[in-house]
Length: 271
Image (cartoon, rainbow, N blue to C red; front, side):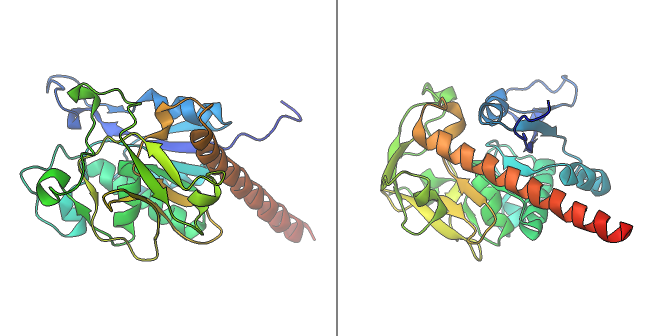
């Protein structure tokens, strides 16, 4: 519609159906994702685009990527520890290697291009590993002194269950989005977590027990990940609205820069 605000296209990655617990092997191969991520993206003005796991067809994946104004990496099953140089521990859950490859490639491209990235839960861990970081495969066995972080719905908890607080770190983008709040109370649905922080990343939130809860890449580009799940909260929640809103605004700005660059190129060719 003429005059309507530009709505950026946001790529949301998918997950292999059979990587999810309890899926019968007889079901056909499928790519799936929780609709809440799509609804949250739409509520703040984005146009969600479901990204298939073309890990063995990078030319097609690249063409999809080039049509995106931003990339959202949702939560999901565990990353394959072999990606960050570790053997698989028995406590490690289901894996989805195709998803690992696609998401890491998308994030690498986005960092190179300055395209906005928002990682949620697993998505933050993807960002960390892309930058050379590592993960605890299972917090309960590798860091038993930490508080409980795995408040999963399949264990009887609500996805909106507020599990613990995180301390926002000054001089970070996440802190600037908090309206002056120094702490947030967040939900928590993960049994893995950041061990070594990836190169160049800044820690922007820490839980009471010292676990990294948010990461971002300093600079002009919006490259950020949080360990919790803000997408499950209504957009009336200030933190959720500001986080998703800033991501969408960054995607609009990225698209506008691209259109301006294309206009300059077209003008130079015509002259």
